[in-house]
Length: 213
Image 1 (cartoon, rainbow, N blue to C red):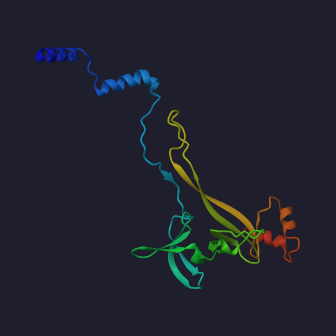
Image 2 (image 1 turned 135 degrees about the vertical axis):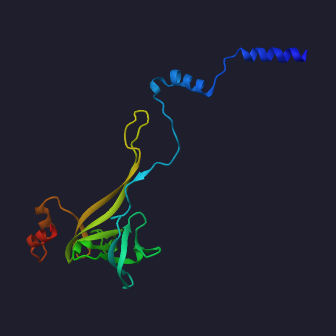
Image 3 (image 1 turned 180 degrees about the vertical axis):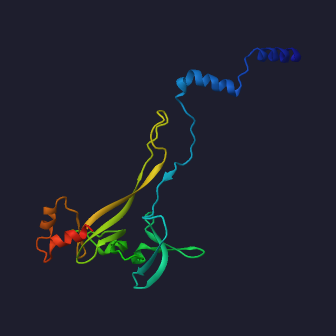
C-alpha cells in the first residue's frame, strides 16, 4: 500500500509544469511588469559628488594660531565639513581645528588669499559668525566672503529613469561688508551702500573701487 501511494504522488508531481527561475522571471515580466517598468533595486548607499574643501589642491601657506604661534611654508587645505585646516607633512597629515586657528595666508602677494577665523566678526545684533572667512578687503572698512556647504540630494526617479543619481556637495559663498568687526549684508544698490556708511569719515567712492578689484 505504501509503494502505491509513493507511485501515485510521483505521477501527480510529474504532471505539474516545472517552473524554473527563468520561467518565474518571465511570468513577472509579462504580467506584473508590463513594459518592464519595474527595475532592479539594490540598497547601496548613494554616492556623493563634489568636495568639502574650499580648494581640493594643496597650497603653500603660513598658519597663525590663536596662541600667536606662526607656522610657515606648509602644504595646506581647508575642510568645511569638519571645520579644520589640514597640513600635509612628508609621511602623514596633521590638522588644526578652527577653534585654535586665527588665520592662514596662502603664499601669494594677494590679500584675497587670507582666510580668517570668522569668530572675530558679528552681526549688528551681536550674533557671532562661525566658520572660515576670506578677507576680500582688509582694514576698518572691508569685505569678506563666508564659506559654507550644502548637500543637494539625488533626484533620480527609477520609474522614469530620470534625474541625478548622486548627492552633490555645494560650496556656498556669502559676501558681507565689514565695519571694524561688525558685518552687514551686501546692499543691492550703491545708494544703499552709501546710506549704510553715511557717517563714515572715509572716501566711499574710493572704497567701492577698491572693493571691486
